[in-house]
Image 1 (tube, chains in turn orange, blue):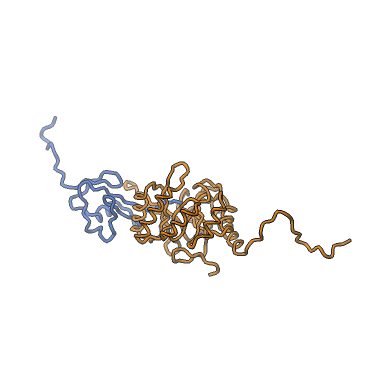
Image 2 (cartoon, chains in turn brown, yellow):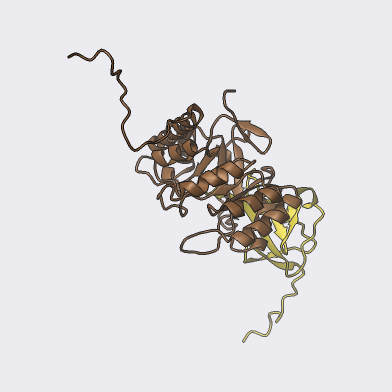
Length: 257
Length: 79
């Protein structure tokens, strides 16, 4: 495989990780995922409605031989709830990979960083492969890596905001210092944002709303796939340095007089 | 008032909550009985009793007791 993405001991072709929330149907979810080319998909852990469990379940549409299922701890505000959610997810039988989020505030959905670090410590000790959602803070990312997280997932901007990468300089520092994959998680709004993340040197990007909330989710899923591919290729190609003044592209010799 | 009817029904089962909903089960009911009775199909689930995960292998032997708080989760769409 050319330029594989290595995460928690497995290799992937795609550097786009997608969420499964906010879709109108399971069929639409599946189609959008197919269009995105993603091989890792996030899911949420929630109570079964025991009075009306429904016939179908999301995972019926996401065969485990094709997709790595990444359960999240979305909606958890405490270490205890996040750890509990991960234990339940593991027991449900989708493996040990978890997307850890410990939310600190309802309006911004910014992570509670100390609680995230504490929860990560517990989960790593219990054998989980932890992918923590964290602010774009190099020190927090360093701590999470030291604890033994399988990757760090700094946000580009608030979840679902579509604002794009607000602090590319912090991200560059995080990328430079990290020995685990850096995955931009949250805040991407359109394909150029995804491309930018990869151009900066992020290993992958994770998104949900940008695709599911687009007028044409399938078309946006494809746009994101191409954006991620373009960004990764541009990163590997090594871009020219940005300069203030022009450099001519055409030769100066042989001009007509 | 009708005094011919028995004034108390003796309840021999266990009263528990499942995802915060009250349920009555026969005495000696296990987690396996509870799950089987919910018709959840083949989906992946996990069960917690009083905030401790019950491994699948223990469903058959784990008896539910009066007042137990059971959580049953599955996976739904999320980001």
